[in-house]
Amino acid sequence: MGNDLPGGGERVLLAGLGNPGPRYAANRHNIGFLVLDELADRLGGSFKAHKGGAEVLQGRLAGRSVVLAKPRSYMNLSGGPVAGTARFHSIAADGVVVIHDELDLDFGAVKLKFGGGDNGHNGLRSITKSLGTRDYHRVRFGVGRPPGRMSPADYVLKDFSTVERKELAVHIDRCADAVTELVRSGLAAAQNAFH
Image (cartoon, rainbow, N blue to C red):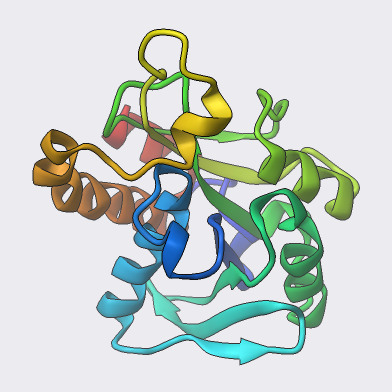
């Protein structure tokens, strides 16, 4: 185990980003929710409403205590529920792992990093503001760039294409594996395995 483990070996918060409700369920912007659903299946649990404003599931992943959280707010207000859930479970910012969509990566690509800017992502901007720091882990799931002149905001609120849906489950599975490796072995090991 390296010294770059999220949370330094303590409990970890895995926050998947998305928008609540069936209208948004299959949108590109909701990939964080979809990856968390896969992790919940692996843990054999289900999400429950939590007073921090998120759907939460506690369990053990890769031998560590984890809290999975899906904010019940819209994407641009994700910070309050993520920070509130972290505070409730006494998890410092470096123990927070945010799983989100990334326009600057090809569809299905998975990249992990610690800290950095929000790259125009309103969910990350909200989380950075609420946590008071950029120093948290990010697992970025590529959704690709919008075609033609479509605005990025419209693009991420569209469902995955028919072609993308054929491969989506495989990519979600791989992203869940990357999150698991990050929790188990730390950032450098997960980057080496998945980049």
